[in-house]
Image (tube, rainbow over the protein chains, first blue to last red):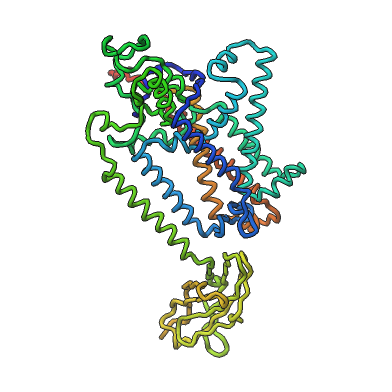
Length: 463
Length: 90
């Protein structure tokens, strides 16, 4: 699994990877991938155009430092949720890898999804595998120039739309569209549209399987999550070998042959150019194109399907396969706990924050009335989508007084209000020279919206 | 152990890109570039510009680090060991 493919010339200086011309596969898994590709691309290209409550439903508004997801607005202070979400994504990947191998790679990875789309365009313009290979070998003439130019024009157009959509996740897409149409894009918007388009064009048009082989960290470590019960695509060597061609209608057993007719279609359809019959290799992205190709051949020669199939190491060795195993239970439990935690944390999240900063210039001041006075700067952050009026209260020593007009502090939606306050207390009532003081803020119009922050109150040392 | 040219280039460019992306997110989540600019007396700074420049500065720094790693992986000369012998210099 981790060892390089035997067909890779070992010790050769600077192997130039041969260009791979994947043949089109037809069948169950090809249909499943088309479905996945269309669903995911639809999600990507349409999401920024959806509205929710008068604004873009999903908008990672970087210029304003706010993320909007449906009815929720996230602030940089909510970074915790993003971190939790990433951990959940990682555990989902572990869970599904242990269960069914590289499902992610074969059907859902953006690299697969966009490469698939770019190959559809390529096939539509240049033709099938044979035609493409012939075209690449042919000398440059008007036809080749036309086909190549046509392909790249379509690729670039699609890539440009992809780049535009990408930036549309970070800045309102409708306004971006208006600016694009009027040639009035900001320099940074334009830069990122071009950068992302170029990356799409390069990755899906040229790099393709090399991204999986050389760039993908997941491809390198996914085998660590595999065990003997993980679903992998495998060639049934016991049934297939010895391989060899035979005439139609000849029972292979009479010739001492297995079911594999050595048609090499499984190699031709492979997007990473490996031979699945050599066993499980890290280059295999689990796309099941070879399964489809082999099933088609088996149907034609009248042998049962599944010479290359989704199976497990245990099943191939005729051992009892186990779907439910400790590893799966641990991943599932962690995944459930984290997801539950995230949902709970978001549901009880208070879109209100109160920061208390003590005046650094003076420790405390004695007033004419003999009270110790501390000065604070409060920062009230209303992360809600509505304006609120708040009441502020302090708790600490008995008789502690707040001098600000603190019964109706108006804070607009998304505003950070800076509020200087003075708090005074009788030194006799202070429990120590430095004691806790609790600022409590509650919305007058929404009883649930409240928060509290503890600071320090300083006074004269007691004798 | 030799690797292909593509893999060579990728081993420098790609990890630095990935880490620069992550670092950009963390850096600008914690620090608002406009607030830093205000402290430095800069009146108008587009956040998008700061994010972009920040990302490329981080990528360049990571790139330098990856390249140095690759450079220091090159085999060095094994010193020739000379047997000491007694010399009578008089």
